[in-house]
Image (cartoon, rainbow, N blue to C red):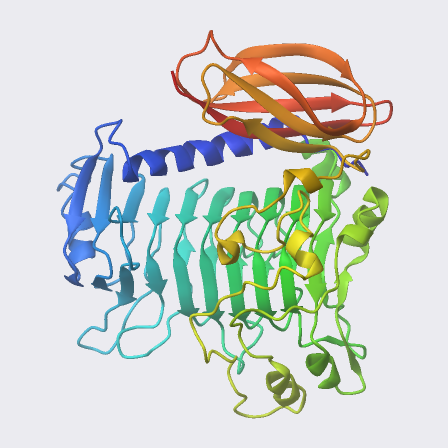
Length: 518
């Protein structure tokens, strides 16, 4: 196995993500591309009608570059599922919104309702509350059901809440899901705990799965349910996951390139592992690539470090004799942790959240006693606050000394004291970003080197065209190394830079983005 991330794959993923988020930022802040905006009044079916009325009788869009803007705190009852095909649908909260607009399934005259979204084209959502609990309290399944190949779903600063089966259901091949700064909660029912999934890919291959700075709580089954399809790139960073129930919480399946870092994983796979059963339940599950997949995609890599995995004592005490706490890693994931020497960076620390959801110990007792009508996951106290005290090891346990888990609960920023940064030789290659950013015309790209390395930097436009190269140079091991980049010859815009460090034994590659403003 190799610990290096495939350069081409990562670049392509990051470029795709940056392009999507670049569009969203400019939609909500600067009308650079003269996008058409439609302000939608709250009400029953008003959002459905606004979208539908922008499609002509021939099926063409009035303007395919339209952004639908919803009012702060507005209630939008959906008159059936929003289903679009072949174009990029963008729905955002108004600028300065103090409360997320609420998208709720309406009930028709026959008493039926439908899921909020069934996209067959790219979908961008920002600043919204979306639930699959209809206006009369009925629960639908699959908040966002992705029903086309190769579409990109970008969700930022949203709250997806209450569903009977999954937050995301994937029916198409090679989709991209970017979920950032969001909450996914209350998915599934304890009467059917095998459901209750964050993302259910149904065995379809995933191109990119990007979870960053999110919170998942009260999922009766798992955050990721992979049915055996290959995931080309998974980036799971800086998330909080609390009360994730019956199955392997993060079931990756065969993943070509994976990163799982800085995550707070608390009471995950908490129903435990039945030692008399055939299936081993773990918190992290990873499948190796087959020979054929390796031939197609290249060597597999998976980074797994600086997380906190903990199952509360009262939950463990609720297990019958034949049940034990789930192991953190399955054999394949453990092999990567062992090879990387990252076990010591992954904590097992009890945390008291500021106002967290209650322990699911009673749910565990009822599950193993086969209660006919088990209690649902505890929700008293919502909205929760999953922050925690600064004296916890997790508070500085991240890979750059930041808090483990979603940073939203700690002011939304990475907190660190530069004077306390480790100045001894680091134990891994870490790209720390560039400063200043935005910049004009120079910026310093900072990184840690675990051993003497030959370092080179390439710069790409957001469409993947190489626009600049800094020749390779030999550098000694150490923290906070840097190379100055002079972009005098480039025009204003967003760029991707790729840092490559070659040691005597390994090659390390990482990418990030920067903005040049002249």
